[in-house]
Length: 178
Ligand SMILES: [Zn+2]
Image (tube, rainbow, N blue to C red):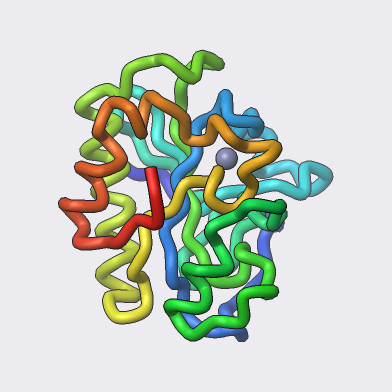
C-alpha cells in the first residue's frame, strides 16, 4: 500500500541531473520523520519515502523532485567517492542527486526490520530504479554521508542483520562499505 502526499519541504525538479543513489534511514538515526513533520513547512526536513513496520509506504516527495533528508557532508564521508564514481561534483549537496527513504523503528534502532517493511522498501526503491535505471547505481547509508552525527543511520537493524546487503543485491545496486 502506498499513500502519496505533497509537502513543500523539497526543491522542485532535478537541475543537477538524475539521482545516483538511494539513501536508507532509520527513524532513531536522528530524524523523527512523522507525517506531520514531513508536511510542516517549518520542519525543513523530508524524505521521498517513509516505510512503516507494517509495510505501508508514504511518498512525501516525488522522486523527480529533491527531498531534504541527507544534505550534510561530514569528515570521513564516503559520498565524495560515490559522486566521483558517478561523474557528479563531489562537493554538491547530496540532497541534489539522491532518493531518500526513512524507515520506522519506533525509536529503537535495534528493532528488527520486518519482512513487510523490507519488501515495502524494496518496492519503493524499485519504483525509483525503474525511473532512473541508468543513473541510480548506489545503495547508500545516511552514515556514508554524515558519519559523525548519523553513524547509526540506518544502523544495525539494517546493516548487521544483512537486510541492507540483501536490498542492494535485489536491486543490483553497489554499496561503498558496511
Ligand atoms: Zn538518516
